[in-house]
Image (cartoon, rainbow, N blue to C red; front, top):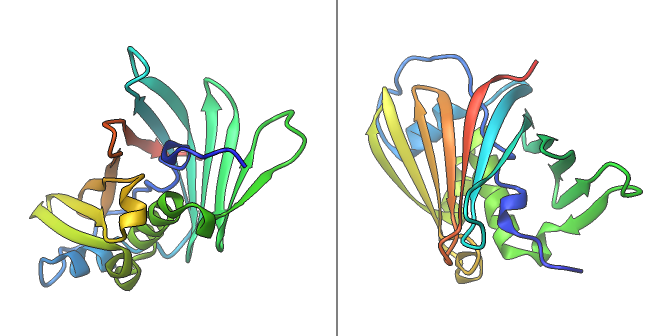
Length: 194
């Protein structure tokens, strides 16, 4: 099985919702609980992959879908077609004309498992899941915040240095994934996908 880069999943989970009142206390736990998605959401995204081997970023467009409590899909529509789906403990990758989906056990790829836990934890409002896998640092205030997720497991840190989640109120605006070698991925939420 060939290695899978973290950026394959980079855009899986960045979904905005309606504004809500500020949490009574300001902490990573309060923010994560406020971000919880209760219904299926679909949004458009623009993803920039800044890879050291490329002179300019690779730009992808598509839609992201989150189905509570923890199913995530990324549909790339340009410049090529591809679908990534996290369901349970498995990642599936589908490419048009490839003859079916490729299935990967997340347990076999610590970096992918950490990434999936980070996105699921944020979108599903699962603070305990995030706490098991990440050191969390919160900056800013309810009107503009940044949540930094640093993997606790050394096996995950070999592939993923940090996830930074940016937002305002309950709206997720962008995710930034930083890899140890300097590559990074920025996923911007463009708006509703339907």
